[in-house]
Each structure stands twice: as C-alpha cells, then as structure tokens.
Amino acid sequence: MVWSLRELPELSEDEFQRWSQLLEDRTGIQIAPHQRAFLQTQIGGRMRELECDSYSHYLTQVVDGLQGMVEWSILVDRLVVKETSFFRHRPSIEFVRRLVQSRINNQALNGSFDVWSVGCATGEEPYALAMAINDCFELAALDPYFGVTATDISLQSLQKARKGLYHPRKVEQVTREERARYFIPADKELQVVEKIRDRVCFSHGNVLDVARMPRVMMDVIFCQNLLIYFRRWRRREVLNALVDRLKPNGVLIVGLGEITDWTNPKIKRVADDEIQAYVRLPEA
Ligand SMILES: C[S@@+](CC[C@H](N)C(=O)[O-])C[C@H]1O[C@@H](n2cnc3c(N)ncnc32)[C@H](O)[C@@H]1O
Image 1 (cartoon, rainbow, N blue to C red):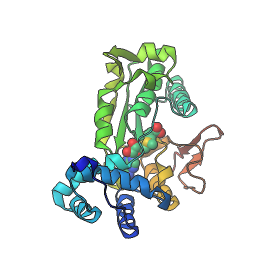
Image 2: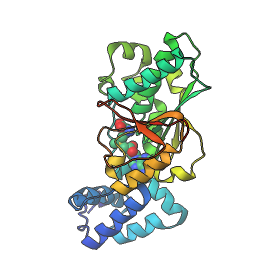
Image 3: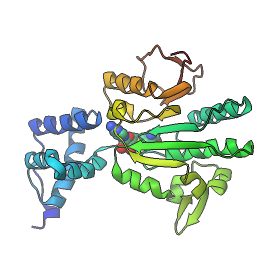
Image 4: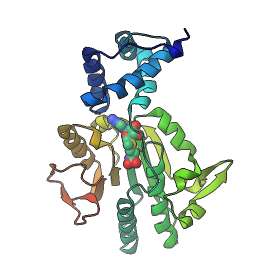
C-alpha cells in the first residue's frame, strides 16, 4: 500500500504526554487532552510524508541535532493556530491610530514610532497597524517615520507574510477606502502596496525568548490571540518581559480578556472597556 494511504497507529497516552510536553516547552502552547486527535492528525500527516510509522522514532528525529531543528521548524507550522485577519480587532487598531495622532498633534514623536506585532502569523495584523499609522503621517503631511517589527515562530507564515499577497476574500474586513489606498491587484490576489510592505520587518522569533532578544524599545507592543494558548503563569511571565521592552509611555495591547489576573508596577491599564491596553509609566 502507498504510504500516504496507510493508517497510522493511535497516539498512546504516553506518546501524547511526550509530544504535548515538547510543544509546550518549545512554544508555550498547552494542548488539552481533548485535542489528542488534532495532535495525532498533524504529527501523523508529517510522519506519512517521511514514511515513518512510529511517533517515538519521529520524536527522536525532531529533537536530534541540526536536522531535528529543521524538522521542528516544519512541524511547528502545523501545530500552531494561524487564524488571523486584517483589522481583526478594530478598536485596538483605532487606539493605536489615536495614539499616533495625539503624538503628532502634541509634537511628542521622539524619533521613530516603533511597533511590535508579536505572533504576527501571515502578516495581516502588522500590515493593518502600518496602514493605520501611515494614515496619520499622511494626514499630517509628515514623512512616515515609523516601523513595525513582526515576529512569529512559524517560518512558513513569515514567508507568506513577506509577500503581502492575499486572496480577495481575506481583504473583506478592510474598508473600500483602505482597499483602494493600500492594495493593488496582483493576478488573482491582492497585494499590500510597497510603501506599507517596506514599513514592516518580519523576523523569526519565539515569544518565550523575549528576555534574550535584542533590547529594542517600542512605542506599541501588540500581542493578541497568542497568549490564550498559554498557561496563566506563562502569560504573566511573557507580559512582564514585554513590558520591559516598552519605551516610557509606550503601550502594550493584548486581546480583550486574554489576561485577567496580571498586574505589573511599571504599567497602568488604559480606561477603555473596548480594548485591553496598558501604558508604561514614565518613571518606571
Ligand atoms: C492565532 S494567531 C494570531 C495572529 C494575530 N496576532 C492575530 O491576532 O490575528 C497566533 C500566532 O502565534 C504564533 N505563535 C505561537 N506560539 C508562538 C511563540 N511561542 N512565539 C511566537 N509566535 C508564536 C503562531 O505561529 C500564530 O501565527
């Protein structure tokens, strides 16, 4: 029988434990027992391609040396949830727009306005941020002095993001005006215009490694729909590390309700029920 049609054995309890532990140790993502079928399908799919029929042998391949690192980068892309969209949470993006506008109006832009999209998936989030910020600079007839750093653990997502090419259906959340300003037809797809693509720098990054990343300070850190997959203690740990990357008065924006039991003496919650944002206190 051809390999692609072969039925793989069930993932045993012990194998499930070992695989889910590996995923959590390396990405922070917690797999619940009811997601065993998901884990089995994703790992099994890759094992079929490699003509491997043992979850344990495949695990050894994944953790073994340089080749293991390459294999892990292929597998992790299949294990993460990459769902995203342009302007997924409008109120959060509009908050960033108002922040930039007020900095421009108050001449409080000290150098470049720097934004970080953490867990950027296929690019819709950082591009939407760049579009909203660009609007502000254009409206004020100023040179666009801003940059968006966009990081993700999935190399395949980043590859797609860099191209900035999207199926027209993916661009439906964008207003007609935004579509006209920021997308150009490219064959059967739509491409984000070059001036926006040039503002976004995509790079590979694991949010668990923030403390080891270069200490570039940010005006805005946007981290949505990523921490929900993490245990609560880990969410708090990641957020504390992100706070240390904020400039004074910089803002950390998470998804609404993604963290409920976290405080940090260096920040203050923004009084706005539609968003969950925290400002870094200037003296902290
Ligand atoms: C559901 S998507 C959210 C995308 C976007 N932030 C949004 O809200 O639409 C989650 C993204 O987080 C990424 N991710 C998961 N674990 C990660 C980690 N440890 N470090 C960096 N990115 C991670 C995934 O690859 C995926 O692209």
